Length: 427
Image 1 (cartoon, rainbow, N blue to C red):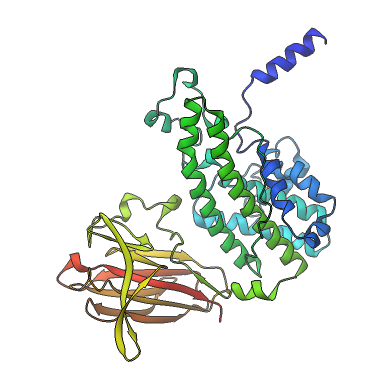
Image 2: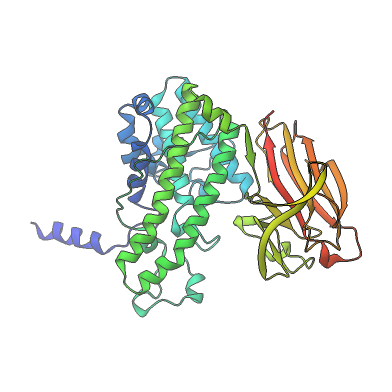
């Protein structure tokens, strides 16, 4: 081998890999997602299946080196913006939803027009974005290189001064999700993009649970533990991407299973993040002092700010009143609102039970108000010894749903208010 070639190869092995999320693992994740698609969908893509996993999934990283293909990672609403940061780093829900919806719509439109290659390229942009959002290297808002986190978790001498982005995600992964059944996320682009947004939230939280363990494994030079953490996130990313691909192809072919359609008729939002939970957590500004120093919680009530107890309400039943526990719901603090994005024209009604915990909130009195785009849809004031109130609100034309609670009694510490089984209904 010529000395110059040896020097070049040696140099390439020593240069850190470009700090783009997942690096080569994009191929592994995308391939795994394609493998679980039904045969009829793989047939639609044909030869583009291979290109989607080997090439198109890198499009947002190649916008400056391949101008022609880079057009599939640009948005009409941001003219002249070649590198869309939002395709790599999640922002706030409104911007994320706009981006997801735009590229899903482009892919679906291309499929309907018979432009399979264009559709596959737009799908490549979609999967790159989803995979980046679910990457353990992209989980700390504003600290993508983990320079701040290293102040809390000082690295060993050999890693000092080195950005951790690349080491956290680099490496080829053997991603397999055989047996996974992709989910239909919607029968319109608006519905599908909105549901995909919330699927992505699950992936982001999953990735966050692995970030610090991966960093600690890097510090300990434990390659096996690093790969274990990466595989946990890559596996979930592959499932989210499979859902996105499956839905895009169903929409493009206008082919839907009746059972899947029916499963989309309602959706519970008790575990969804409201707009107030920026970056998927409640900032300090959202904490309140009644009934305890806390914030809204999904699925539980926190007694005294320290002890989780099940959601429970008094409800009217069989001509009397009985206590009932609820798995789906939200406990809230006074004077704070919860605002949820809604997909345009998809859901017609919102139903929910509102009341106070029958044991913790017996001395409280709370006003429950539901708003749509800032306008009051319904309101009720309840005492702690009263059964829960059942709301059923018209959502036609509503794009943001807001749940508001305020104390209306003398004992603020008794205001353990609950929104139970909050449900969006199509008809």
